[in-house]
Image 1 (cartoon, one colour):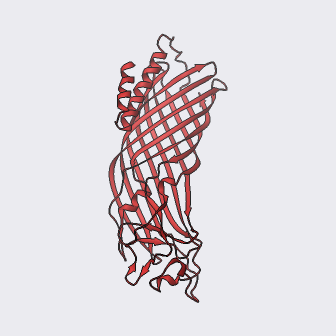
Image 2 (cartoon, one colour):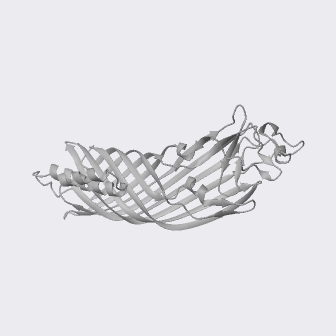
Image 3 (tube, helix red, strand yellow):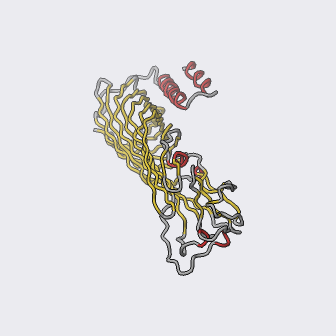
Length: 379
């Protein structure tokens, strides 16, 4: 036990999160194993089947580090006789993807397990969280300033009129399915190993709001400043499509190991903890739809990469009877080396008439955490 703690302390100096998570499994096993030493073994007449139904309420942190909106003074001529004034590098950043903190979203989790009197058991579990969303806007500025989004190549997006804001939205969906075999080391400690599939989808979209009053004159009269941005007389109202949409899908297939332990138990109340870590193959794809002169240009790329997933949780359980129990807990799920939508901006190159995906950036990580509440039925 002391050796495990000393090892974890040394790792804090600079090893990977994956190694720390695995060391946590060892420490938790040692702590609970020591706590259970000398206790009389429990009866093996416990129910064989257990069915759980829970609600997860999770939030997400970690949306990458991509500049989305910067400011250029409104008196800077943006459009020149030779095109956009790209010599004026975008100024102060006012919105980054790391500011897109997604609000809480709820999803179901169901599970079933079978326990053999010999101490071996199996479990199957599925959950999803689909409504993780965030929305942030920048502008309009007073006095007027250009709102600028820059992508590799020739793509520079500004607002058409001083009254418009640049709005960015992020939408994330997660599915998880796992099957594990379990082995009881003691009445308090259970090891597990199994296979798991996860699917993480992320979409980032930028739009101008509200809609244009008409065709902007500043694109035709050069050079022009933001104060000159007025509609062409008699031009119809233009419906602006989203100027930028990046979508990623991560399909992770892999194996995991873990430990489940009872930390405390008295009468009808108990506290359980679980730690799991796994290595996965991530088949990642990214699609982008970029609007230039109101025309949509699509592109696509895919790749395979190694990913890491760690999960931990603690839950209090209150037994209403020998068969029914209520559960309340905290859960955290960390995914490392996955493709998130903001990171794909730098992987999408543009010319005046084309858009090309240079690849898929799989170097991002994200954390989902929150509370769980549900019921357990054993028979």
